[in-house]
Length: 558
Image (cartoon, rainbow, N blue to C red; front, side, top):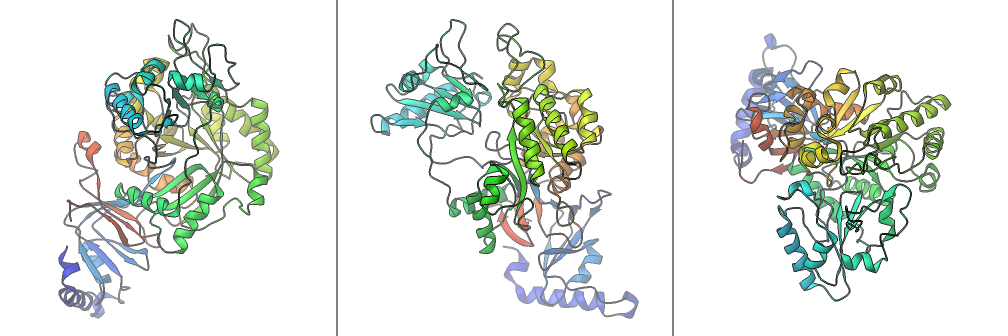
């Protein structure tokens, strides 16, 4: 506990003295407004238009009141002001994630922390030993083979050996299931099973099923219903977000029911996260639910509708085939999950209804499809001021940038390569994989670019996002595509003020400036000066929302 917390009498005496010293003389000009909180002796990265660095700031009624030098800001301390000595710590605006599904975890088998196939199989065996006969064993989705020592996927036979006789399904991200032999038999999936449009049922070189179901092929099975998240689950997740310095998240596809949970937490004055919400649905269904574009407030606001045109890592739609053997002798280009005609009709209809679109597109051919649909929507009704986005945009081409700029698109990038670099090299070849999420190129083109994680597909850590975009280093694949590295200031902007631009909220968030929401993070190190290798281990010491502390590191202090 700090002195200002434990000795209020000392605080009042010091604050009163400072207030009199700063405001009492005619030489000092008119009295400074009295703040609720004053933070001094720090390194404050304001992320304003000039990337100014201050020493101190004041907060009143949940907003930044003033920013400047320690001596100047002390003038805002009155008799009841809490004065906090930052002791040289670096402060940044609250962090944001532009593509957040969940923090991970949940009721299923947790394999997120396994680091080898042996550990993964042990988790399945343990679950099988506790399960009733006939149970379906299902994993959480927040894992990837790149985290495993072997850096490969388990086969159907291996899953069967780990949990004999049980229908086992590993869920990975939002695009793939991996089934055991018993699972394949349970749902009658054989090498002769027809592959649904927009999906894949991969086979090995001998023609045997690998056990994987990709994208629309997942509809061939039915998993047990997962209990709906309660409002208390949402509140608990907010605490996890705050521990990473995250205060703002953009949710790319959820339900009206969850949106109302966000609103209820805020109405109960229990919320510590501000949401930008995209729905999976149609303009008609959302209208029937009483939800409109831009509904909401600073705690939960409607951003638009989420769409998708291709698969994920193994299903991004490309103009050139995948690398061998994934390329299947030059015939595999990824997955198109919706036809061009159907997509065009979708975006025209939602634009006419007053909605804006955010579309998942991984491969460059998918980006072509999105651009064509957006151009047709724009020809029908101007979208250029609405801020439509492309989500992910792993692979892009130089000939696509003029169309992106002409449509005034906003690019939503994430740090997938940080986790899965070795796998993407195998899928697409080293040259193509090295240019995944080309932040610098897109920024150099004058496009608006923000950053995030795609959690729980990728681990929830905004400091890893910044580290990756600054260094282009990855967990197990080394430095990949160093030509796409950005500066520290740019990376910080991608997760602060650029996010606010994405969500049309620069007037109230994204930087430490007067009249903006008092949301900020105290860091464990000097973001701008510490060695680049140490950025990966940076963490939040404390997180504040509206001037209220919502997280404090249990060990580190300031």
